[in-house]
Image 1 (cartoon, rainbow, N blue to C red):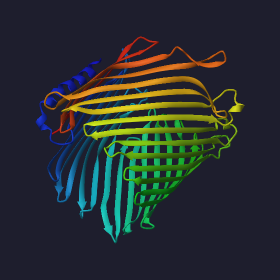
Image 2: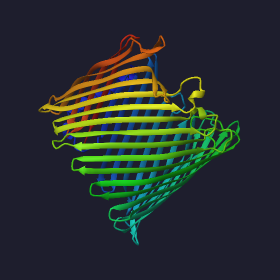
Image 3: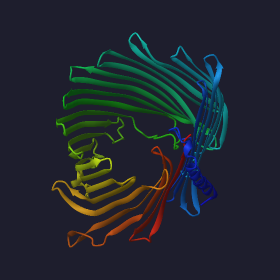
Image 4: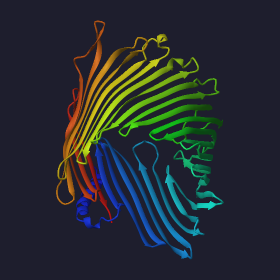
Length: 617
């Protein structure tokens, strides 16, 4: 391993024994220092976090924060790709004059990416001074300004930074509760301009007990300029957002309540490019939408029912001025104008026939419509979706809990134009399950769940195709988990899961299947957790994964399961040691070594290592 990983992991190993020797310093619930290392096969991650805050008095304080993450992706012994991210902030506050406080702020963010292949690396530094105060006990004002340095795409910029905010705490005026917030933040970095303006106003009133009404208006304007090449070519993205939300709760009667929610919004996006080779193109996007929900909720004794209607409509309109060059940050450029709508009816029924039983029945029917005015686009489609769920729960007197239920999900996808009608299909998912939970005492807990899943996808016009596209997936899954406090502070934990799967071609008209492949998956783990000395605990165990696949083949015009199967298995020991203080993890060492083997390659080993240390002061 390279020199930097050795150095970082050595820090974690040194910090762990230091942590053990400083147990008496653990007082607060927020860690001031946090070091960690994790290895998973060929990926290595180091983390180091600092979070320190001290209050000298009610108006004088110091905050220091640092977040460091380094990731190594080892593709081969001679090829390593790194990604580093460092975020540092220091903030000092002290009185300036009467009710005014002054703030000194320093920030540094360094991001180096050599994994994705994109020029994502960036460095930003900020030094700022500001003031803040609270007027009349309700109006909070903050302002900062300073110098900002930024480097990305090989371009270095320096400019003026400014920020101001005004916030009105919840204020009652003539029976109406008012909230207001205004925030502005911007910087000028050479040729680039960045700003963010946000205004929010909310008013609410309780007319009489149980009747609530609120209205919120939000306006947001922002701009981001960023480089799209090392030559200094720029792309500018500007957005204008407007939003209006309303929420109403009205008691129709003693047991019946009406809930109404509405959301209206508009968003305009402008993307323009400034290129050295000449003026670039511009793309504009207009989004408008509305979302409403109406629900009647009935509640009486052991009965809970609700009936709701949901309607959503949105439209997207694109306009282009000249051609715009694609880059990883621009998003999709070729989307056609479109309009979509969703209408849904849903109901919920919950009834407790006795003190130990509960019955739940849920239904949902929705229709999605997607339309485009472009005659050369054939994505126009309708979707019909239905969901039905039925579940019964029984609570035994001694503590066990039993559940049994099932759900059905249906979806019919229909493309309007014949050019894509071959993709019209029905998707039907059927699911049956039961579960049992036994917890007679805090020392023993056993859970078991059995589940059957069948997923059928049937194409409408398959008879016109030369091959069968319809398919089926079926699965039987059984899961067991155990947690048992054997004696004292020694715990036994076990887990097992069996999955029996089958994939095949589907002939829905005759409800017949041509099997293609079947699988058996086994997951198993067993661990014993016990104390060592003082607050040190350890956990040792074993875990394994076993998968066997059988393909089907045609033999004398008959489908037969192959006698030769594909085998994949991994297994190995698990070791953990951790330090606790009042049920908090102060330190952790976790090591798992898995031996991986299949019937086509030589066995190899995978190491999974997790180290962590935390300091509480």
